[in-house]
Amino acid sequence: MIGHTIKTARQARGLTLQAVGNVLGINDRHVQAWEAGRRNPGPKHLAKLAEVLGLDVLDLLPRESDNAPR
Image (cartoon, rainbow, N blue to C red; front, side, top):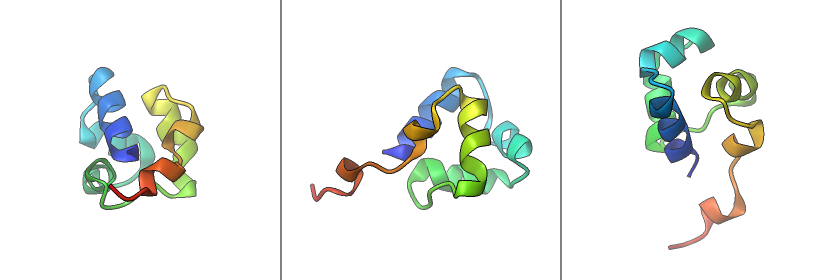
């Protein structure tokens, strides 16, 4: 899931929710919602988020398997 990817990368870099939010110009609650899977980052934030987390933008895009029934 995208949220897990975001959280894992953020923690590996020692970043707080607030630090990521500050760089993106958004509230830390938005970042928390992404990590919890309640929302996905919009196109406006994808490139900067990937850069901050040291990821490729493709790592932050939904995959077909993310929507598969469990």
